[in-house]
Amino acid sequence: MRWSIGFGLLASALALATPVLAQDARMTATAAPAEPSAIPLNTGGVKGQAASEAWFRQYGVAMTRNVTSATLTPFLPDPAKATGAAVIVAPGGGFLMLSMENEGWRVAKALADRGIAAFVLKYRLKPTPADMGGFEQSVTAMFAGAAQPQRRMSPDEAIAGLSDQIADARAAVALVRARATEWKVDPTRVGMIGFSAGAMTTMATALAAPDTHLAFIAPIYGSMEAVKVPADAPPLFAVLAANDPLFANKGFGLIESWQKAGKPVEFHLYQAGGHGFGLGKKGTTSTGWFEDFMHWLDANGMLVRQ
Image (tube, rainbow, N blue to C red):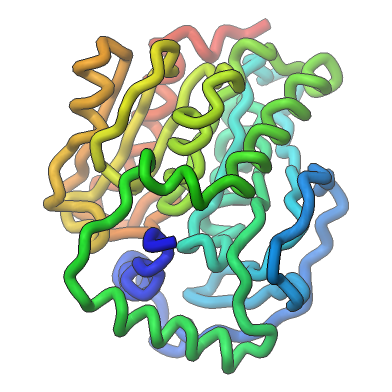
């Protein structure tokens, strides 16, 4: 799938987006963290995947790869703060890895602190070599490939190669709604937010699985390619940094598509932040996107306390 060739650029973009020491760019294998709250989604495995799920640290944050069994981890708000809104959180990583800490757990905790039930989706990934050396070589190869000029896939085009991820997202939404009473969630206010490849997963779910009836979607530093908008498309909140090395300076077809379809859309283009900034890169206006998102959810009636 051509979408994944941007992984090399993604890695360099993360380095630009995160002020860490040079040695933090190295991939260091770690033991899998305890995930006592992770709920298996039972959506199947990954064709051709022989290696086991593996965890590592890079740029100071926890990441995983070779995910073959999707899970959903709840981060529930204090009942006194609960608004009834829920968000499926899809981390990014070029479909070869997942930035679980930077774009998953931290985001989910921030949402829960604001009274929103958040659920981190660990979705299935493309196979990578079992050994870290082989994985690093595959990343190096993608650096070389990403340097070659070529057109990126739009979400419409990428859907055919994202059947696993769409199935995982669909199962996540169904699980949240099935346990809505237990988790104090309004089943009509379940949305999805995704970062980079997670933004692509979010968009693909909204486009290819409209029967999920997402209440809203929020692609954060994702593709801006134009798409065919479903008749019942949800409100869209999009974020991008003007210096994003992957998606800036490529037009705003996605936003224009939502506008032309007459669907609610809000777009924030921040002056700086690069790619992979999670909750925001310190010292840039990208740190404001989360508060803007909260205001947008509130203005759209998503944060009405029960």
